[in-house]
Amino acid sequence: MASGWQLAGDAPTAYTRSGHKIMEPWTDDLILAAGCRDGDRVLDVACGTGIVANRIGLVTGKLCSIAGIDLNEGMLSVARRNPQIEWHQGSAADLPFESGSFEVVLCQQGLQYFPDRAAAMREMARVLSPGGRLALNVWGALDRQPFHAAVIGGIGTFLGSEAKAAFDSAFSLNTADELRGLARDAGLQNIRVRFEHRTLRHPVPSGLVTLFMGATPVTGQFMDLPDDRKQAFVSQVVEQLASYVDDAGLAVPVENHFLTASKPV
Image 1 (spheres, rainbow, N blue to C red):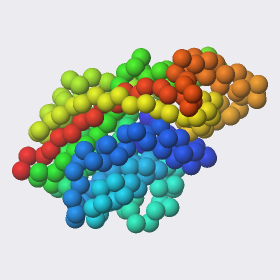
Image 2 (image 1 turned 135 degrees about the horizontal axis):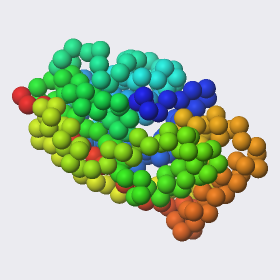
Image 3 (image 1 turned 90 degrees about the vertical axis):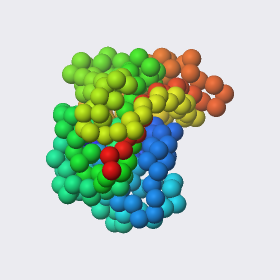
């Protein structure tokens, strides 16, 4: 995870569960977009607990050398449970790798959090080998994310504006022009941005809300609420999502923006 999404305590382990559920419609798409080949060296930037890195071989069926890097030691402590991947702690704006070290760089929901997005994009381009491929994704605008909008609204009501502000960066990189510009300015080519809309499903809406709130930068504040306030929080969010419930449970649309690009040969 990036500097804007720091988790502590039990939250990294909980994030592995909630992150898999929320990112499930997108992770495999991101991996496939990079076109991994046998023998590729692959870097997962802002790898978190390894949600992307751990699926590369399964999704592609290719034999790749995989590394992950993240700023958050708590997230990496969970990621290191898989010793077959090389895990590093460090900043995306100063990657500790030689230029041209990787044929593929992936970054799932990280770029929007980096304090210097341009520097991070330049670094991802730098460590790509000539002809190497970059694939990343970021969320669309918050007003196009009913689940997150409802949860973040609840955070503002029950935990206050400062807690709500912890989520400001998450949906802040939401235009195709800005994504293209960052890639272009980093010297990349064959730049393509695509918007994808998928359905986030969960059989019990309250269960997904609780799961999400167990893995955020404000988890501690949420857990400190009295039980009746926690229940009121969950009930408010579920009520706001009522129009997205069908006979199988919650079925809420999510918008994600993908960027793919390559490094000139």
